[in-house]
Length: 126
Image (cartoon, rainbow, N blue to C red; front, side, top):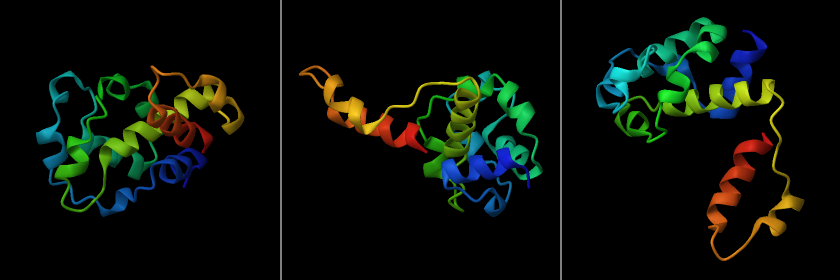
């Protein structure tokens, strides 16, 4: 298993080997027609270690992160979380900045929901 596959699995917390290729995730996806790699195919790409194709895919940014696929999956594979993890991998390779706990207080104001900052902290600290 490549380092990138292991990292995607770690970030997402998903086991893509549980996928039974039923296609329910893709059938419920509101962005299905816009994607070059569909959610069920995305899982297969991770299984096969073809991460370069995933990170170059326009599906990475066509995904709305609505997690309809996560709700619909009978096996709990959570393709949306895999897509989000691949997105994170691309951001990290580009050298994106990470939010640290010390930076959060300075970002708080009456307009910004605290949940947004905590979500960003959890997402970018892995």
